[in-house]
Amino acid sequence: MFPVSAINGELQNYTTERAIAAVRPENSQRQNAQDNRTPAQRTSDVTARFAADIAAAKEQRERIKTLPAYKGRAIEPNVESSLLAFGSYSIFVEENGRYVERQIATTGRTLSDYIDSQGNFDQTLFDRDVERVKSMAAGLSPNSKPTDGAIISADLSKKVRLVPVTYRVGDGANGGAGIVEFDIAPDMSEERQVNYLAISEIRAPGSLHLYMGTQGRTFTINAKLVTTNDEQARANYDKLVALRAMTLPEKGYVGVLGDEGPPIPVRLYGYGMRLHGIPCVVTSLSIPYPEDVDYYYFDRGGVQTGIPIVNTISVTLQEIRSADELLEQFDINAFRSGDLPGW
Image: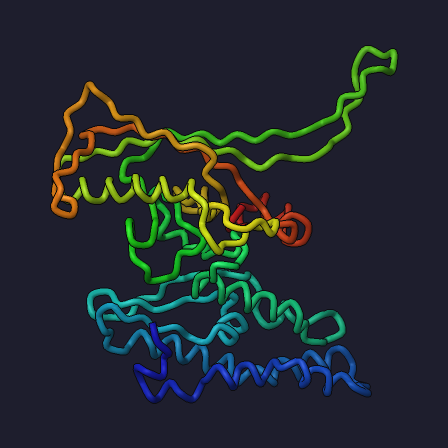
């Protein structure tokens, strides 16, 4: 991937530096010093300050769609302006010679949502959204927290798939990027325990129950890998390798609680918004070597390698969360509405 300016010089008018300068903290601090404006006046001034950048971002998005696309290359618009204008961030990927928009992340907030009741621009909230979306779009460093990984848009998630949180946009599909996608809908279950402390020593015909917390979900996947040709054999072999890797320690990776070298977590996708990027760790994996089926042999590095024609594997996933997600980010109203990606 490379900047928009590398594709069309006309798009250089809107730059990252310009967007950052517009929201630089010292600018907000200077405006708030000895500020006698009313909240309405401050709101109007903030809106005017970003108006040109928002208009440029909208114009840029439409112009990108008219550009000739280069195979294997993508355009990454400016994150700051995209969030202010659209409340989401998209990249543009080549498809049949044209650039097609692919949404990477959404905040649900546009400019007006970053202006508080006093008409001040909430720099802290905006910076947090920008950093989160940048990590979603560009992938993670080995020391990033697992639940900051990329949430892929729902149009990529109709099939059940496991995506490592270190996945980078553009890494590719199965194998190289460690993604496991099940071509046949697996037999799945979701289980969650709610903990109550029962107080029964009250000499009464019942118990009192004190809520103690809700555990993360457990997902069980029983999936069939069917192999009838060389292409399927290679893909299914890569999936098995990727699944094994999800259970092994990763040197240099730091977990959500600061533990060093745990296996890299994954995000669970499937059925559109139903399973939309839920962060999990693989807690068990079963790969049988059945004796009652034929094996398909294919060339793997010069060695004839066998894989069952029908191989039913089992994966157990445990949902994980960071303290910030649990205490600060979770919104029960958004969850009820079904509009909380990652949950």
